[in-house]
Image 1 (cartoon, rainbow, N blue to C red):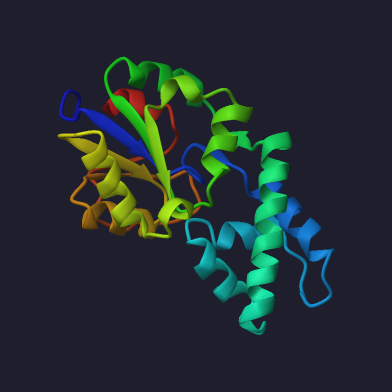
Image 2 (tube, one colour):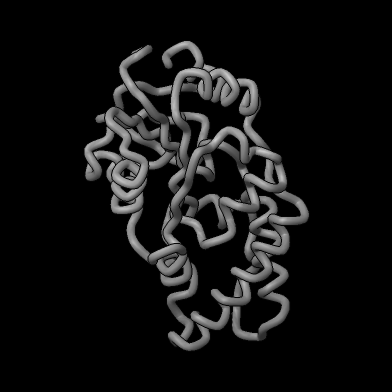
Length: 210
């Protein structure tokens, strides 16, 4: 697949890093500030909803809450999450920076994620990754689904032959909907049975196929 693409668009969570531990601590801190959340919020809980949009996450995890409380708790979690991300960051997958250095010499690099506004920026700033990525888009910018955000990046940056790298079925469906080939990051949080043009077991394998 070398020389077949002009750009690589990445998902963030489960593809570039694992920030579920930091997110869990942030959401638990928000939980401790209210009296209406029944359960603790663990890293396993956060991993189970990785890749979902912010609204869908809270609809799934807290269906027993009235809409007003759900929105209030989502707001508290969002605030805690950005504060924790800015301070602690996440766990970069092995070989990430070396692989990005290689890919940058051959491709234009971007990020599209279903996260809130400020989350990608925290990844870039805390781990000093700005120099590798030309642009990014997220759900929080316009409250639009990932397929449309991928399409926006393709159009805004005039990408001719992009490929998307992600770790969930939702990532695959979004890339397919945007007409962009998909590489499955098998080391992430989800599973994709078919449709991908390639699968990688670790981030460094991207160097061998791209």
